[in-house]
Image 1 (spheres, helix red, strand yellow):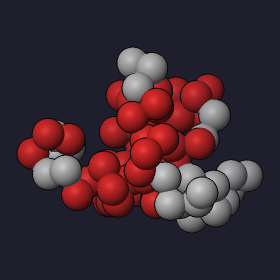
Image 2 (cartoon, rainbow, N blue to C red; image 1 turned 135 degrees about the vertical axis):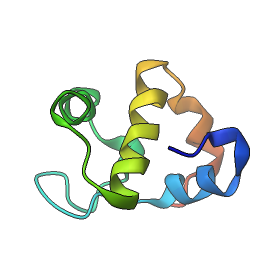
Image 3 (tube, rainbow, N blue to C red; image 1 turned 30 degrees about the horizontal axis):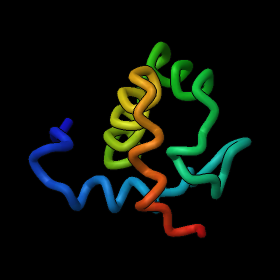
Amino acid sequence: MEALGSDPKILLKLAAYRMPFGKYANRLLIDLPEPYVIWFANKGFPAGELGEMLKIVHEIKVNGLEYLFKPLRTDK
């Protein structure tokens, strides 16, 4: 997983990244319910970019950092 600090563009991308499938399809990843993200963490994140983004969301949610995305939101 690429560290957030190494590329600020990742935060901007994550702020607009949407869940591509399932019950929460088209919802911003940062808006996914924490229990759902924790479920992925326990069961295994998907491969590829989605999995990497979900790993970052997991770290953000378990550390209570969602507020960092308020100024970055594209769905105002």
